[in-house]
Amino acid sequence: SLSANLGITNSDGVSAATPGGSVTYTITASNAGPSNAPASKVADTFPAALTCSWTCAGSGSGTCTASGSGNINDTVDLPNGGSVAYTASCTIAAGATGSLVDTATVSVAAGVVDPVPGNNSAIDTDTLNVQADIALTLSDSRSFAQVGDTLDYVIEVTNPSGPSVAVANVSDALPAALDGGSWTCTPTPDPGTICHGGSGNTLSDTATIPAGGKASYLYSATLQSDDAPGLVVNTASASLASGSDPTPADNSASDTDIVVIFRDGFNGGASLLANVNAAGGSYVTGQMQVDAGLLAHLGIVPVDIASGRSPDGKRLFVLQIARFGSDVALRTLATDARGMNRTSEWQSVDLAHHVLEFAWQSAKDGQRDGYIAAAAGGPPVLIDARATSDRLTRLLITVDHDVPWLLLIDH
Image (cartoon, rainbow, N blue to C red; front, side):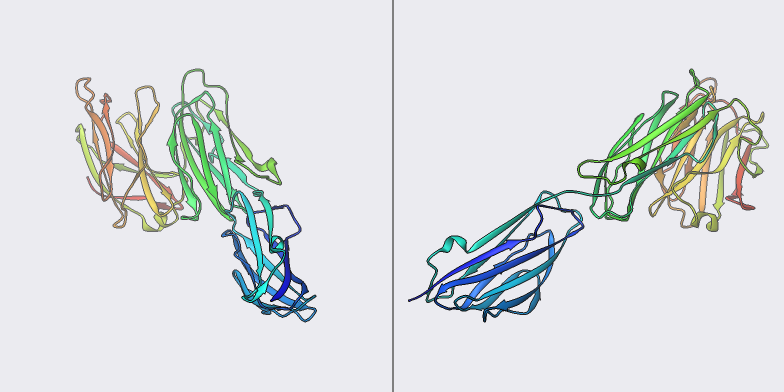
């Protein structure tokens, strides 16, 4: 019978690789004789994390398929002293983890005996090391704050160039002057980026961010009256759960606000005044039309669209909207007797018809039966169990670029 000692080698020349990068394997099958080995088989089922294309060239009268893509499963002729060499160029999935273990084999056809079968397979192993240049920015888009204010920090964690998918630990421990923290997160792209909302005075999340992706957090908290310092400094940071970041200096950021008692122009820009309760009743409702043009430009940063005032000018509540991905959300900030904001949760609203409704109930005889509620196409956003007896008489409607956010239709 025919006897042919076939052998194979397999190497990409490295011991470590980067998810999102590439490797190139050189796979050589040869025949040390003494007989020819026609119709031999060369095979390589590449790891699932790889996408490969390959070329092949023969030497010493060896023949093989010139090129292909995907796994190698090729019938070759290997005469005594002949060989075939494959060059496989492979990209690594950006989210791959662990290691790459690639095995190439060569086998004789029926009727041929291989006296040394131990050299008929070859394994190449690479450790996968994540590499991603994540970056973090932080801002609340203000320089001054008053006790009782809700501060809205926008924290953006990006993975601009990868090449790997970044699994990032994101953290923001609020300074002692802030309390009542809660956050939402908007992933870009979605699906692709994964991040989570939560509550508490320390934001802690693990975000998965592909190359070119972004996790956008809105972290809201109230500035407390007790021992509020002259400055409120908030710092957020992000770090890779594993792997290397070539520029870690951009993985943290800080935002500083000066705490003031009064500042000219502090309460914002232009607004329209609408009288809603000339009779002074304790229960007031209203229906408002939301400007479609302004709504189209809404982003993650909350916008004050209206605030309610008592007869003496005291602020009773603020209506805010924001856009998280494709969802428009609404919340209310109700001011308590100490001047502190009491903040509702964000709730998705349907503003397809650009109509928003509100209701204010003053508390009676010291009872906790007052509330503020706002709704659009679904359940109301409600803050209840309030002992505030102030009556709502006026609405201040925010004007943006000479356009009011709301038009009072009925009250």
